[in-house]
Image (tube, rainbow, N blue to C red):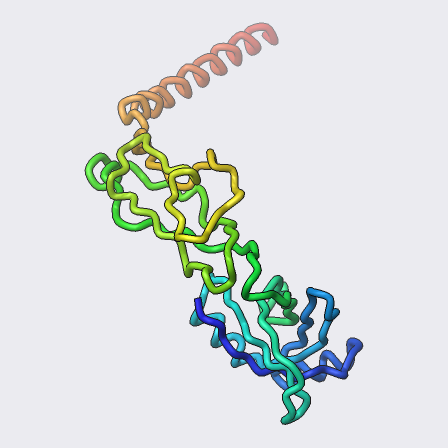
Length: 228
């Protein structure tokens, strides 16, 4: 895991109107919190940030934030993204929460899980691979965060499963997730409907209709005789 440098500007504009002004300039308001240094209110270039996140899609990115005031660099520190706020309609990025971290202290982050290969039970027996977990919470030093966790599924037959306890994590990486949780499993093929049974139900429908019609006609005849 590399630390990615990102220049950010100290923000003196607060309040709804001023935040809207920041967004009109194609910047994103953000805040950095954590440690005894308190919080720092910043803004950053939207396109630069989104380009980085697209390149590292799904990964936990460690940023080296360079906090500036105009052309002057004030301070710098390492941070990770804790939360992004997006517009519920347009999905446009509205705000970012960063958390200040130390490169010498372990942190808990989420990394994606990726299945590698084609399971034997899928390839040869028509089963399907059930991806029960798509990501895993891990604990490690920031620079030891893996991009993803790959799990080889080629040997899995129908009914086989891989649990969290079966995952071989990289050196220096641990997890506190429930070790018995299923990550991946091969399910048997879906049973097809009995076509014969379906045909029988269709063929019976006209008979039922005929029987109902005959009954109605018989009742009608009885009523006519009674009236006479």
